[in-house]
Structure formats: structure tokens, C-alpha cells
Length: 345
Image (cartoon, rainbow, N blue to C red; front, top):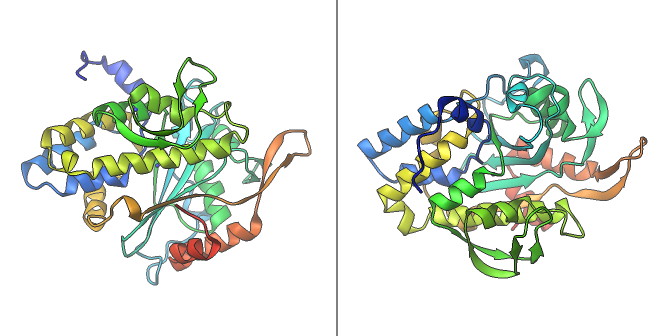
């Protein structure tokens, strides 16, 4: 599932930028939950009033997997995080379930097990070749263009045979906002690069990123020989670094900093209607003991790259891995699967 005081933003601009949304981080919830009384009330009010609500996040009920009412997965939670290219058509069309020229460039399935002891972040490469209901075979990021957020949910639920409980959408600009609100984020950059579209250069190694640097870090793919593979790794690294920063005493014990974080992040969030402050608060209480090492990130295994029948460069899905992960989600045993498969970090 990131990057000052500013002049008031016109209402029309707020509505527009509200659709350019920030990644929903469980760690933000933890930060809010450790402080009591009026402070929590103010944070909840800020979250509820400043976040944007996705008009139609889910497909019709008849086409969806049934959420179990008992058993290991009944209390687990699955959150879908999407990153969208807002330079294309208005994101509002996709949020309302309409076709548009939007593409979901970043796709992450967040699984929170019933025991609330870990958070699992599974990145799905945007060029993965899958069946999109009603449209046949295509790259998975085309689902947004064909049918908006509901079709993305339907595609992924069909792939993993498990129900998605909540949805949040992220524009990469949101990473800049949260990074600046935290006063920078310490990241160990694994591969140095010069950004393809800007003059930004990052060297390999540990360093503190500001908002602009964080934005370049999570967006870049052209500079790498393996493109999106490295980009999703960098995104995972950055999200874990953000969570470690939020969970540090300097943030948790600082009401001013925590308030600034929620105030500045919330306007960039678009979430389904059920992901309100009450739901967020309940989840935060369950995750109170989660720390950086308890957040496990991995990329959905693939069979490499290939060419589609119509000549597109695609990522070939690994049906065996998908089936195993689907079963692990159903059994709420994703941690055991990752350990056996030697995945996750």
C-alpha cells in the first residue's frame, strides 16, 4: 500500500486532487490508535470529512465470492490498493464503474490475517495477462479502462477466489505528500538510477528521501532493465520504510506530527464507503502490536514475460502460484505459504 503549510485549496481543486489519492497504510491507523480521547476524535473527524468516497467500488453481489461467516478466513481482511494514471481521463469515471482510458499502474492486495499479527502486501504486475470478465484475455491493468474499479475487483476476486473487503486508490503524488508530512523517510535504495522523465538522480544505499525524491523512487521503471519488477520492489521497500517512520516514538508520541500526517494525507485518499473512521479504528486496535518486521511484502510469482496473440509484451501468470495463494487466503495461512515458497521480505 507515498511524498508545510499551504494556502487554502479551492473546493473544485480539492475535489479533483481528492481523486489523486494516497495509499491507505495500516500503520497510520496504528498511529491514531495509540493516542486517546479528543485527539482520536479529531483524527477520526479529519479522516471522515477529508477523504473522498468511491461511488461504486464493488461489482454486483451475485458475481462475488462469499465471505465466510466462520472458519479461519472469516475474520481476516483483504484490502485492494490501486495506483492510477490520473494524467488520463478523469478518475471519477473509473470510481463510478464506468469505462475510461484509466489504467491501474500499481495493484497491491493487502491481506491482514485474523490474528492481526502481520500485514501481507502482494504486488501484482500491471502487465499480467489474465481473463477480464466480459472482455476476454488482456493485461490486468486494462480492467480499470474496461469497467472501472468494480471490474478490477471482479477480476481479482475471480483470480484468487476470495472476497475483497475494502478498496483504496493511490496516485503517486500522494507519496510526496505523506513523505513531506513525516519530514522525510529513511530508505535503503537497492539500485541507483537517474529518473527517466526528470533530472532526479538517486544513488544506491541508505538515505533520507524528501517528497520529490520519494515520488521519483516509487514511480521509476524505465531506468531499470527489469522495469516493473524493480519498480514494485521499490514501492514495497518505500511502504515499509514509511511504516517504520510512523511507528517510531518521534511520530507516535508527537500529537502535532500525527495530526499533520492525517490532515495532509486524508485529502489524497479515496476509499470505499465502508472504510470509514470506525472501521479504521477497529482495525487499528487489532494491529496495535504490528511493527515494521511484521509487514511482509512480495510480488505475485509469474512465469516471466512473453507476447500476446496480438503482439503485446506481457507478463505470463503462474497458475500454480495463483492457486496456492488463493488456498492460503482461504485458509488464512498466507504466512506459512510464503515461508514454504521462500517468498516475502
